[in-house]
Image 1 (cartoon, rainbow, N blue to C red):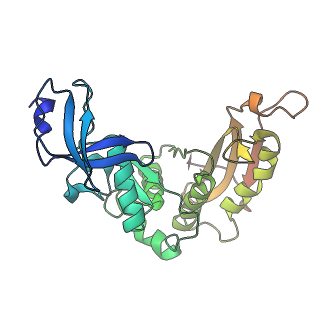
Image 2 (image 1 turned 60 degrees about the horizontal axis):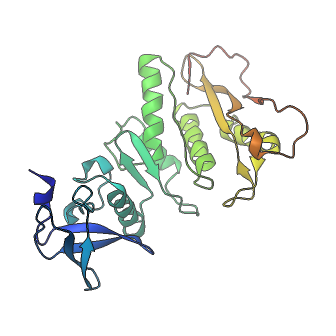
Image 3 (image 1 turned 180 degrees about the horizontal axis):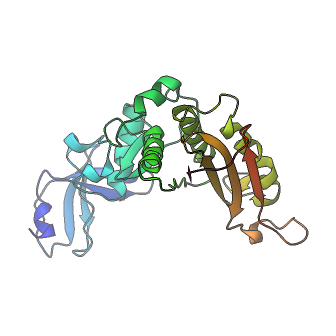
Length: 274
């Protein structure tokens, strides 16, 4: 089926908008190849002859039955407005901050504490396959922990996002999950010790940006070590990709920091790390 054949009456599209970024509109007249305009009606009832380029028609909107899916890859049309709308519906209407995109977990920062990180939730996700339950950072952590224990191979979790997105908090919940499911010593508090080292790295690696007065200008790699029984015994954190050009007030040569965070366990004969 040619792309133009999908732009028929009653189908819906997304129209760029200067204020809303994208605005939904319903096609009121079948589009024919070569037409210079797409006849649409906006949700407020406004009729519009939207100028189009046959090679770049506006993105189609997903059927309502798919809106709110917990996995973006389940959408018929996967593009910017579809992703933004799906995330908005889940966050605003369902109060859900997590959404999958295949093996990727998309998180929206609610800027407040939510009651979804307690021990009961941790135990609910423990042993479950990713996708069996609602999207959650604990599901990602469980998958990494399970793969490490099952295959005896090191695992990595990448936490990325813009300034203020909630990366540090997400990393903390991940470490808390590992500490709980591995039945590590309650006195270890690895996540607290790792985070307590933040002021050291931030002292030489932060700079003021338009979005954050104290924004991290470096990447951070945290290695969590486990013993042969897959219990946490320590952690190591180091910075990388330091943006020296953004941190101009430091004197002397900038060096990569390495911070070791050890628990009260003596041996570091680990069988894996995350």
